[in-house]
Image (tube, rainbow over all chains, first blue to last red; front, top):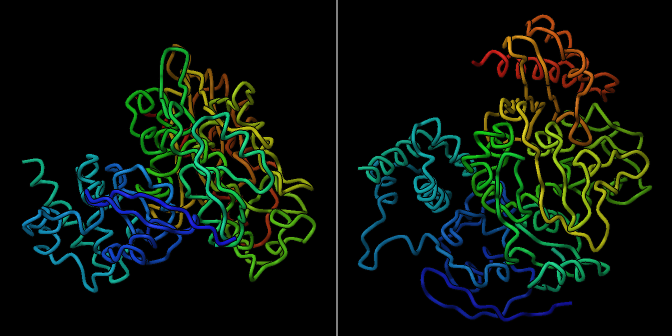
Length: 159
Length: 327
């Protein structure tokens, strides 16, 4: 039963048409069908947060979202965060400034999660940042710098 | 993940009809279904996407209680001001569950339908025997590594732990599950494994959860959810308790008490014996600790999960004392 279905996705403000099997996840559609490889595949089972994207402004896991299910929603990936002229998003800049990564593989997911965490109002203290960023694992253990970067970006957003 | 056909439902009736067909499964947030499809546990022929249905995600709270639409997201319910003030245990159970991303995806109806985290259940390739997956095939957990398995409500067929948090609070506060017209007490919605562990919920093909409702009560207003786990966040409960308390006018005598346990039983576990033992009594630490032992009456361990029998009453006692001693 290898049926294919036509879907229409709106990603970072651009429209895309693609033909996929219904079982294809948003993560695989982004990476393998659209070449948007900034969104990372870590565990592929909803446990590590590397595939975090925004759907209608909410952070979700692309590995547990069917591409077909995302039709009609507005999707933002790490590629859609910076300004058109290349100016980095405040959270991206804070991650650079605070050296909030080592290998960098979890970083796109961390940043997408952090942007939402700050917007949700869940970055009020280091403890709150740790709790609400818990869905993004970093196997290098860059957590102290990640918390510092989120704290910095949250303070900038508040001022 | 086996391929399936995808159908997006436009109305609740269409969803119910499509969902009643053999091999069809409803898809809401996807955090259980897509996960289990990847494990090879769920093999739907048709996925009926109900996540775009309109009008099923409302949250309303008034003097009589709260009504929460089945498609409301866990995160929205957790952050709702009136849920936080009138049903703090519900909000706390939600925000201590899963991760922020999963809570943005998972719906309240889907949360009720989440499956056990039993590692044998989730690994059909390596463990073909699982009565929950394949009735009559046996139980790989019994005699296996049981550290996370249940000590209450188990049977010879299954010792899988019910993993959720929200429903522990719902059971404590007598919530109702709405399946369209039909309504069921949440306690009756969850079934004990007995000889039929493959049947976990009292929901029939063609039915769909449309809402849950929670009656207002003084105990729900003064409530908490205490979750003890191997790491501080993003982990299932080793043992948890939803507790609510109402005092007489003297502020010391217990008029109403609600206690339910998570992480230790095969379904969300109301501990009525603890409640009855303390109603009418003064809130006194030794009495609370003694009564809390009743929470694990009849518990049976399978070796490595023995610690839960000791842990659960301590969690209950700490939760009662915490909420009781807070002015």
